[in-house]
Length: 257
Length: 257
Image 1 (cartoon, each protein chain N blue to C red):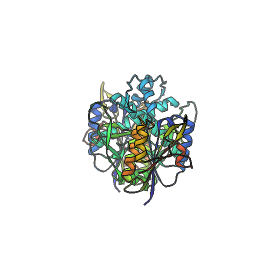
Image 2: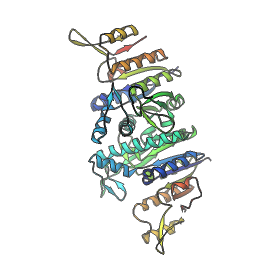
Image 3: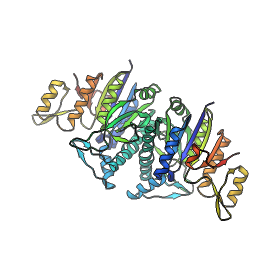
Image 4: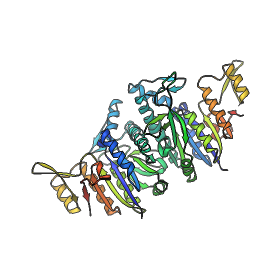
């Protein structure tokens, strides 16, 4: 089976133009099948503030009313997605930018209201593997933003980490998939003798331990949950680290069953 | 050869939600190959004003500095394009929204500076017919916004009428193409005994006449030029009219050699 890399790039990297340019250069050069998934949270928050749209983020999840959805659609699917695609084209990588509505690539269900009403936030229902296969087999590289749709005309804001994991899982039925979460740090960090050190390996047992000690907390918990979910469901390799890990021999955090 | 309809929808229709919903319903139901091209100028101007970005339009062409390009990318490729694609998916039309950078679909050259510096405005260089063929043959309907790219990492603002015409021309090598310009009027109008009447047919000879009398002027001139350019270069049918012309027996202006 052919290899496929699903790479998620974090918002803080996107905002650092030198780091991001260097990442896109490395990404463009990667051989074999690849999919890029991006968010871009801070940029959306900045635009929302300029437009007087309320920004409300709980545990890293954006409460999305219609105005907020419009802002995220403009930033994720418009500004950032097309900037990336334009740059990759200039680097001889034939990218195509898609939201979950495009080609019905990612359909989702509006999150039911429990304690919190997240508004127009979608929980992924189905990945259209046929579309991704069609693009990949024609040497077209999908660049996915963090927007899905409900199949009834409504766009939905969806967490980019979860999109990356869901794509990796579904496409592991067709390809041998690696899932790489790239962000501004070199991996999951712990404080050891008042020094920040890399956690080189996270297993289900060590994860429980790291959570109980508060080393892994808040926004990192759903990320690691996504990693294990991917591994349990057919993804072969999961790494968390800096943008450099996609090509070099940089250190990173390996998540393993 | 199979039939293909290239349909351009104007910004004033997009802003009228009832008219636009009705158009998208009709568009979704159209049989055979189809491509939708849209602009969305006023929406971009509104966002620009809110963000304090200067709006400068000369003869219907937007002077596009970097801030203005960012705004048009957010509105055209983000807000409007994804709204349309989401709606079409809900109407069982498997649409994919693309800018000219996506899949390298439309490459362009930054307009040389003569009397006016249009900034980041692109004149179309090449249509990637392979990509459109791939999508159409897989029953995926392209929805194109008015953004192209230079192949070196730069997005460019490009007139939607011209994109529609260029697509129609290039794809007429593969399909039997009709080009339909839909806007808020029933076609090209003339004042006859103080009444607005439809110009039912425009030929090269009558075009000269209509221009000399000032009946066809300003923004309508490049539109009609695009129509004739399409006809001279292989497009079979060209119509200008209301959104209703894509499915019904509504009156319209026929442009014919």
